[in-house]
Length: 232
Image (cartoon, rainbow, N blue to C red; front, side):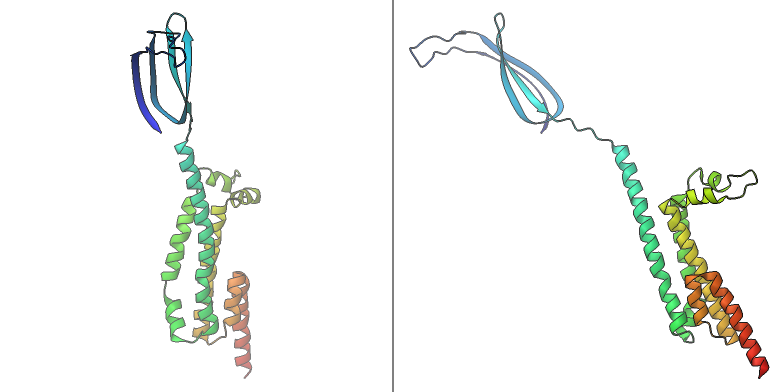
């Protein structure tokens, strides 16, 4: 309980003991107490008596003070760090899940009207790009450019890049970046396959796992189909 209390009391104590009608040891003594308490936190009180030959008896109230020291700025910083880390983790998971339906359409029903209509749209890429931009904003620091372009030739170095990607938010943004690029490449392979009447299921699947290999597979597949059609 927190209160601001300032009180004093003066009383004349005239009492006799119950045994033998004897007078009190301190007849007519003044008992006073003046205790200023200013915005303190306490839960219990201890009462003591201080005796002085000249001043008489003084009642002393000793509150047990509980001092609570808080650091609101530190709490806000900690909450902010925890929130950013959670956002990065959530974006990593949901970004991975979000691209899977598009790959499912291109692999399972590549010639359906729904697959063609969905993959012609740029909305999924815009949404993932916005998510990537937000994660990039969270991971960006004043020293980011110094870490990337650490050499005198302003070229990135592997130790600096490894240090930068040790941050969870940076890693999450890089992962979303890869998902967007891989999905875009898979869409180009898919649409090119529909246009050229070339099988693309294996190439699209490889784009999900390793985009450069998927693109190379599609190029080889088109070349083999061309050679096969030319021989007939």
